[in-house]
Structure formats: structure tokens, C-alpha cells
Image (cartoon, rainbow, N blue to C red):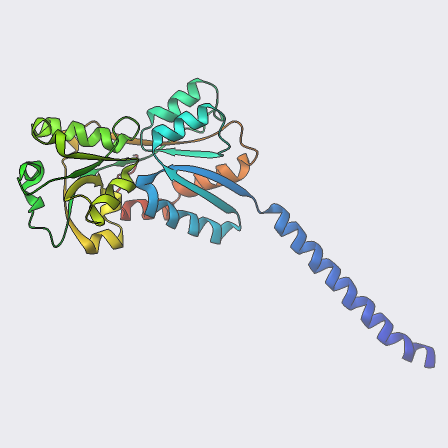
Length: 266
């Protein structure tokens, strides 16, 4: 009996240590299951995709490293083997070309949204953007911001819309080209430019929505901004990349995209 009396604390300690070991192993497994992906995304997604990432990380425990820029520049980098797992382009033509070159995971190409462009001016501006593209002819305007059409789909859409509205010839000498659509938006928001043509998704972000007014350019004034995503074949994290792409397709992911003015694929 005395022996059992002294053994009870020993068995209790063994039980505590065993439970700690089990919990420790459980935590190791959870950490091992969590993954990380790198995403190259068109800058029109700046605000929308950050919300998507926040929700995805919260629900899955996975991590996402985001790089924002122009679709064309990312396309050139990916052709040279840039180490991204996922590519979200503002022009689905770029990921299609990567697919044709055999650089993507077969069947992963996804048309995730259709973008829109707007004429945007600060609230303290004398310009009435509801006049549409003709407002760009106003003599008070010295600089008009757009994204560089050479490698930014939203820049090409801006030029196309101005040509459709027959104002491009009158205003082309006043254009200031941003490296991407986010930089073009910054040019106007900072006062470096008087007005600009930017992505609706940026104009609807809380900061810009409160700071300016915009007029939505009709979708038939330019080629459709069909946006596409793809998983890169070189990715070492394809399972997590698939999870992220599926989350973008989910009800929650699509709700976020709609809130930022994107039209979703049928």
C-alpha cells in the first residue's frame, strides 16, 4: 500500500507528459499541413485580392505572399521562370499564352472576372465627370493619368475607350503613363494629374471612393477586360495553389469580387 501511495504522483506525471507529447505532435502536424504560395496579380486587384487573401488565410491556415504589378511585366517574368505559384492577369490572353507554351498546370486556367474602367477625378476638382469622356477635352486639364498600354490591359482599354469616344487625338499629348493601373490612380489621387481613367475596382475601394467621383465607361466602348488566373507548372505548392483558386471561385471569394465592381464569369 505505501508503494502505491508513492507511485500515484509518478503515474500522474507520466500522464501529463504523454498528453503534452500528443498535443505537441498534433501542433507539428498542423504546422506541416499549412503551406505558402506566391501570387503575381494585376494591380487592379489591389484591394479585392487582399481581402480574399485575408479570408483564405483565416480559414485554411495557409499563407499567401502577394506581388502586384502590370500583367504584361509579370507575363515576361514568368516566361523567364519567375518563382510564382499563381498568376492573376487582367488580360486572360497572357495566361493562355503561358498555357500554350506548356508552362502551366493543365486545366488550371480560370476566367475569374471581367473588369471595367472609369473616368475618375478628385472631389475638389471643378471637372464634372458625368459628362463622360468629353470632359477630358476641358482646357483646365493639364495631365491625364492612364496605365501604360504597352503592358497594362487597363491602359489599352483606356486608349480604346478614348478612340471610341473620338477624344484620343485631342488629349494624347496630355497623357501621363503609370507603370500599372494602381500607379495611374496614385497620380490622380496625389494631385500629380488632374483626372484619369482607372479600374472600377480601385475607384470603389473605400479610400478612393471617399476622395473622388467617377463615371463608368460603357463596356462596349472598349474590348472586354477578361481576366484570367493560372497555376504555374513550376510551382512546388500546387495543392495550396489549387486551394486558393478554389477559394476565389467560392461564394465568399466571389462576393468580395462583386463588391469591388467585377463582373463574374457565368
